[in-house]
Amino acid sequence: MAETQNFFVYGTLKMGGRFAEMYADHFDPNRKSVCEASIKGKLFDLGFFPGVKLDKGDGEVHGELHVFKNPEAIQDIFDRIEGYNSENPKKGLFDRVEVEVSLENGSTETATIYVFNGDPSDSDEVESGVWDIHG
Image 1 (cartoon, rainbow, N blue to C red):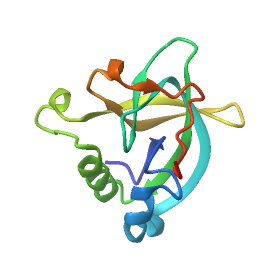
Image 2: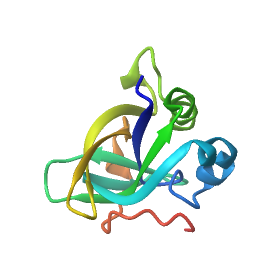
Image 3: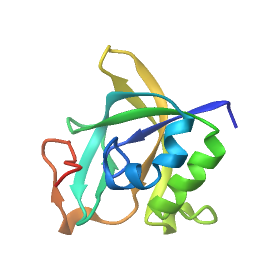
């Protein structure tokens, strides 16, 4: 694995979010940078946390691009939080995929994101594309 890895987060792992705070002792010393970013997709309110479905349409999800050193340890924590099943990724709560992320300055980066594996049709879409970490 590379020396650093980009992760796009859009919910409870955003700065100040529940899991970001819970794992701050692991994340903070390994975080090289964080900035606002967005992806093409749709954001859904799944109850206590959000889920994303990737979409090439007009939908946009706003979140943060985090660059971490020690990516193996960070990815392991993210995998556990997101219910990622490494033996059968489509059977976990979320799948881990690579996406193109747009930064505020107009540039793009490739980042790891966790995409909801379930059917969000019974969930409300968050039209703004922004998950309120305090909500």
